[in-house]
Image (tube, rainbow, N blue to C red; front, side):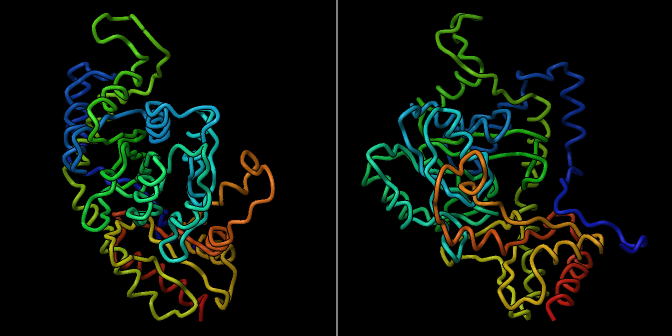
Length: 370
């Protein structure tokens, strides 16, 4: 790496708004744990943003998934269909309940879970489907919802990577009976760690609030009628989240500008497939991602190695979950996901990227592909 050039990370948070002021206010108030005004305000802002009646903040996105499954009564003997091409937390949350994750293949164009493969994997034990909006692109929700209605299944959106994305004009996080988001440091908005569930169901929202706080009786403090969890978000995290929500539309617009700038720099390379956007989708490009086609001159891993040498971070696509030791229980071929995983690269995607940063990245890729 040229020491005169700055390192370009795969992602970094943008916390240059009111974050410091709100967190300082939180600290000065003394309300730093799981009670305080910022938690309810953050929940209100996020519910309004998604267009749902409720949003319930929790400690992280995995906790959100676990609570969603738990309040729906999913447990031992049940099956939940999940995409194999996603972060492992989606499958782990199913496993935590004692249910079995059943892996489905990807669509070749959007890279999301394939509704046709979902249909093939439904059994009498299937209780739910968890579509993941991979890398910020919505899954094709209508056929998924139709399958769920036909078979009496729950749909839980995993929108961890897709804050603000739209399917047929409607925000993700508003289609399932329960929906989950993550606010990890690399997400479109962050609370450091953190997650949230959205729903229009009053009863389910109340159940989530109850179980996230050790199932403590709202009428009798320190009295617990069932086993709950410590899945609460802190007021300090929520203070950070409130400040981030003030800029979420700005961040989404910036993500889309980054994607357009990448397209302009890479669209002339015929041996690359660029990040998709279906006609029915408005993606938020959480990660700007590319696929290297078979005729690209060097391998995916070599591209990443050379980028690293030039001070440019990148990361491979997720490994298919069914191929990893905890879930590799026998022969299973999901060829689209396996192919995408072997060819995909996530490029730097932070909202802090400048045009010159992106030009530096695209020039490096052009040189390797020509």
